[in-house]
Every structure is written in C-alpha cells, then in structure tokens.
Amino acid sequence: DPKGSGPMTKLTLVALALLTIGVVLWAGYAAQGSYVDEYGVLREPFPLLALGWIFVMAGGATLTGAVGIRIFKNLRGPK
Image (cartoon, rainbow, N blue to C red; front, side, top):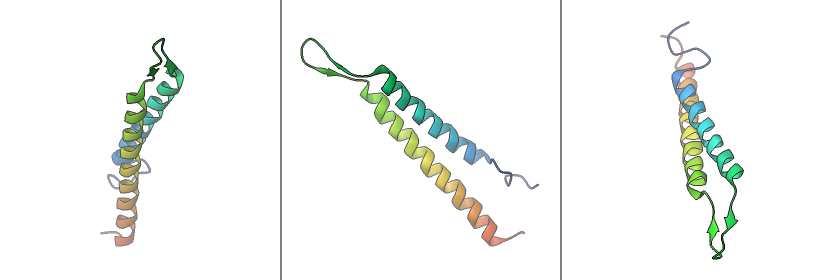
C-alpha cells in the first residue's frame, strides 16, 4: 500500500478534526444558551457560533480537497 493512499489520509484526518471542532463549538453554543439580562440586552455566546461555522467550512473545504486529490490520482492511474 503506497504512502498516502490508505483509506484515511492525513488530509482527511485534518478535515474530520476541523469538522469535529466546529460541531463541538455549536454544541457549546446550544448548551450555554442565550438570555435577556435585567437591562433588556440579549446575552449569547455568539463567538462560539461564528467559530463553529469557520471550522465547519474549513473542514468541508479540506475534505473536498482531499476527495478531489484522491479522484485526480485515481484518474491518472498508477505510476
């Protein structure tokens, strides 16, 4: 099995890690919740939501790149 052609390449693992971090951030946002304080100001952990989106988008882009590289290598054929 040539290096980098296994079912889980390093790039795929990085993508899955980014996606997992994003989902954990969203779960933290949902678990913490939001509320209106005594002055009528909405208090919510908005950075968790935004960071979750950033990590999920980065993970999706990385995973798309990993799949694209795999398809390109398979279309080229063996060396």
